[in-house]
Each structure stands twice: as structure tokens, then as C-alpha cells.
Length: 455
Ligand SMILES: *Cc1c(COP(=O)(O)O)cnc(C)c1O
Picture 1 (tube, rainbow, N blue to C red):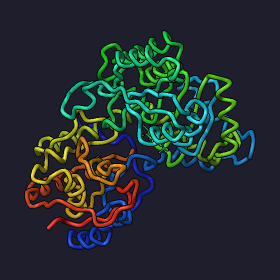
Picture 2: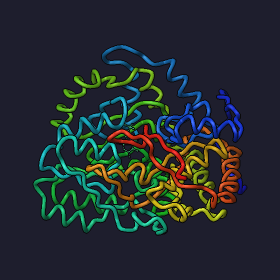
Picture 3: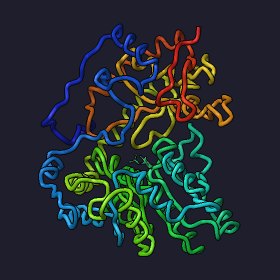
């Protein structure tokens, strides 16, 4: 059969409130043309993020009921620890309330002034936690990873030669090497097993531990199965296990590939670091058998981890993201290629060449998507990155709109509706005007800035 159906039925539903284009124009104006300021019940299709927005399964909800809320030694922790270890064989598994809490603890231990943390590409919270500790966050992505139209199958790979040069020159300053699987900042692009092995070999040569920022480990493993010839006959679970056999530790946001709405963990083999991490955990998160979570959250993660490596799920997941990307390409809309695991990124600079970068073409597109279709997405361009520390404005390298797809939430007809909305957007795109910022906070302005159309 060529149709890949959603490999689940729906037991519990959330209604979508239908709105008209006229109504949405008013709602968008009231939100000052910033989708972060919309009420989510005024949104029909929400592509703002894939983080914490997954639909949980009946088995996960059953786990929620089974959650044991004992302060110490809860059997829910035991089930969580066993589920993590089934895929990721680390000695010490330390639950946190989300991924950034694991990062904060890790870099409080290994970071600090003068230290350098290399990564294929740091996610923004990772970079922020590295820099907050006083250390330098370095991105060593391969050059293809920065080129939106390069068709390289593993655009998340680390440039191994650059890593070697760094380790030769700055050996003492590097406490560990990181790899982000998949590379979120670069469009959900995977890292190959070959690259993981090459990075590991270098780490061994220089005596450095390798840590994974593992948020989308299952999507990464499925891309390895699809694109790396040696792995086509391996199960995803065995690929995941092999990936983590090369790592000495990991940080995780369970809000992505553990199919839950909140949670995370730090796992590692180094007993001394683990001891320090648990001490920090008790100050900032909680006792080591619950971290920042309730027992029921640990149960939901344990079940989610068994569901995320199911190949029918991953086939549907990766294919449905590609389906949207291919349809946009067919409409002549330029996107970052190949399509990543969790999101489709539209190149708004190429799509709306009549709008200058500092009139925020990606923000204008985000507004049009909402007004035309009730679709919410996020600008990743000069609104997010354009403001310099001295208050001046500089165009970002790319003007992107990210359509992040929540896991197991939308059906194919929702996606077909989105594609139809884009037909209208294409027909009307030449009338779309640029935008200006009328009010903004000094930092992280994209969350709260107020906009208007340019005249
Ligand atoms: C989401 C994410 C994080 C941070 O996790 P939170 O749970 O949001 O704190 C870190 N790294 C990557 C790659 C992510 O996608």
C-alpha cells in the first residue's frame, strides 16, 4: 500500500474552534501581530513547537494512574530508570523537570570560565547554559549543514577535522564533546552513525567524554536506518543502543522523543560527576528518585520510551513531515532540504524577495498563515536574532518560518488543510507587506514584541 496511515486510533479528542478569516484578522491585530501573544484556543493548527505537545497514548495515561508519589524510592522511578537503561545503558540516571535543568546541572559541574564546549550545533538553551557558566559554546557543524539547499543526507554531522584542530590546540580547555541528535537549530537534521563513531574515536584519542543532547534520538536513529546503507536491516532499537554505546553521558528533554508533556534527565557513567549532579539536583530539582517530576510523569516517560522506537510510528512520523515539505515544494515554496524530522522550515527570504530582511519577511509570513488559515508557526530570523547587544539591528543569516509538527496530534486531513492554505498564501504573496516593531523588550524580544505593517 502506498498510503501510510496514522498508526493509531483516537480515543479522546480536543475540539478545534473554527474561526473565520475576518475574525482572525482582528485576533491577530489584538495580539500585535505576534503569534506568541495569541490565545491557543484561537489557533486551529498549532505548529509553534513539537516540545511538550505530544498526544499521550492510552498506555501512558494508564501509567499516570499507576504513578507512585512516594518521596524516596518510588517504584515509578524504578520503571523510569529501567526504561531509560533499556535504550541508553548509563550507570547514573538522574531525572529533571526538563532538558534545560539537566543542562544547567551538567555545565555547573564541567563548565566555567576558560572552558570550551564543542557541539555540532548547540541548541539555544544549551548555549545559554554553557555561556551562563562562563564557558564558550562552539558549533562545529559541517558546512553543508548551513546551506539550506544542500541535499546532504546527514546535515547534522560534526566537522571532524575542525574538532581535531580544536582538541590539538585547546586540549586542556575541553571538558567534554557534545553531539545534538538531531540538530534542532539546523532544521532537525540527523547525525550519521559513521560521524558518531568518528567523533567518538577522536574523543578517545584525546581522553574526552562524549555527551549526546538526545532530544530527538529516535528520529535520528530512524534516519540512520533510512539513509545509512549498513543499517537498513537493523531495528531502530538496536540502532539507538549502538548510538548510545559510543556516549559517556546524555541530556534529554522528554518533551520531544519520550512523548510526554514535561520531563527530562541527565545520564552519565562518571561516578564523581554523578555525585556532584545529585547534590545540585537536591538543591534545584528534588530528591534523586523524582528529580523535578511527579511519580506519574516518570511512568509516562517509561511507557513513551517504548512507544517512540516503534518503527510504524517512526515511519509515519518522518513520512508525514516529508509529506508537508514535498507539498510546499510543489507549490513553489522554498524550504530547507532535505526535510528534517520534526519540522518543515520555509525560507521566507527566498519566498518573499520583495520584503527586505529588516522588514521581517518571516514574521509577515507567520501573520499571513494565521490570518488565512488559523495556523500558528514561529519566526526564526531577524526578529529572533537581529537585535545586537548595542541595540542596533543586523539582518540574520536566514529568514525562516518553522512549522514544528506535534507528535501524534494532527491527521493527514489537517495537513492537507494546511497545504490548501498555502495555495492561497502563494496566490496572495505579492500583496504581503513587510512589518515593523513598535515595542520590544531588551532581550528575547520575539516572545513579547509588538508589530505593525509598514505603510
Ligand atoms: C528542547 C531542547 C532542549 C531543551 O529542553 P527543554 O525540555 O525545552 O528544557 C535542549 N536541546 C535540544 C536540542 C532541544 O530541542
